[in-house]
Length: 115
Length: 116
Image (cartoon, rainbow over all chains, first blue to last red):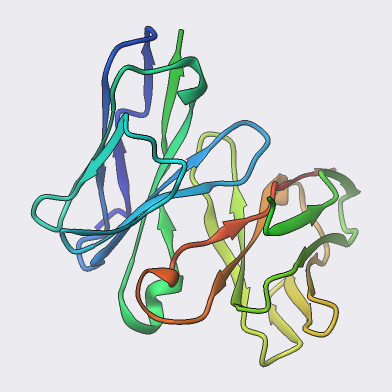
């Protein structure tokens, strides 16, 4: 296992278009998180899955954002009708449950640029 | 509202020197305090972490000092090397079960440059 994998690494799109990012977590990790990072800021929590269940969503996750983890393995994050303010790095992380739940392993991120 | 405040924003240190980055928090429900290191084009990587039942944790050249009464914690990098040049983030998460575990609140980051 090579860690958390994210695709695509970079996406440039025009305002109003839809984009989708994929995250493949570490295989034995049942928890999966999405964070957003803008320039000069730390990552901000967006949403979290335990297995296939989406258990928490941040207020940052507007109605245009949707995340899924259909079989409890990979996850997708879709942004509809993109806006320039959506330009950011979207980070995926995974962790074990139980005492290891705090220990997050992050992927390299998917950078979105909205023109 | 920034739950974890980090300073300085940037830091320049000579090779062999000590780098010190400070963080402060208000929420007493926080009970796990990790530091992450991020290189350009990469995701954050866990460097070292501490829980409030100890005042210091050391791993190699990296040490976390924790002051529970002051609600502050800091990262010390001894014998700083050019390869340590990166952005460092402090973070905190709350105790409790369920989804609170793993929801990290990050500081804004410190860009460290170590001159050879």
